Image 1 (cartoon, rainbow, N blue to C red):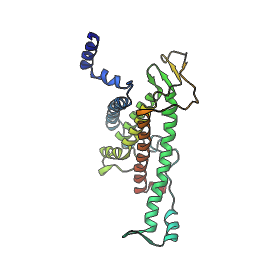
Image 2 (spheres, rainbow, N blue to C red):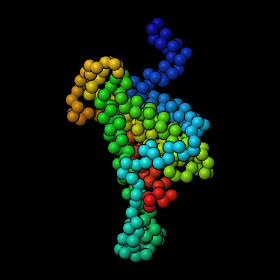
Image 3 (cartoon, helix red, strand yellow):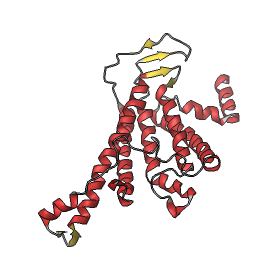
Image 4 (cartoon, one colour):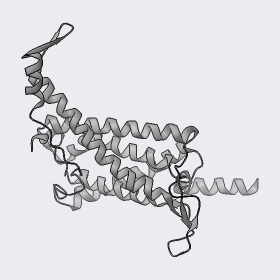
Length: 257
């Protein structure tokens, strides 16, 4: 009882310790909360550094904002469907221009798939794979998540997105981030939190060369209960964020280049 009271007193004096404990909670939703709190702190610090210390657009045309599979769309969607349906088509009482509608939404669908594939490949390597390794209590994917958070803060702080910032001001890049970047980051958070128990090898510290096996590498890690829920939510948010970014890409005509 006295020990528990002492721990509560220490946590009240040092709230960061309490937030730190959330990172290693057995409850997946508490882990998500811990990752979000620390992530937002790292993002804010990185944004301030990017905004005040780096030049505008410093990170444009880098791998931080480019896509592995590109964002090139197609010029043929509208023409193909116009040949099939005619110049216009109706859905109930609403009439639509065939070429314009299918050009827009066909490209949004295509770019959504490419964007989702880009993020899923990153998740596969830097979250799912790295979560197979743990140093002490830290899954290696957590270090990638913090690095990704810092780099995202720098991208937003320097207005390095390929899309015009809201209001054409540098600080308006925060609005662009809220439109899709926040949800990508949130999906990474959910996928990280739901797979931290996928450990294959574990070491006591970075200087410890003796890695202990916790299971078989090729065995499919099981997801049960709330971990499974959060995992599914993470994939859904990743898909939705890919769709949101694809809409921006097509709206600004980036898919034509």
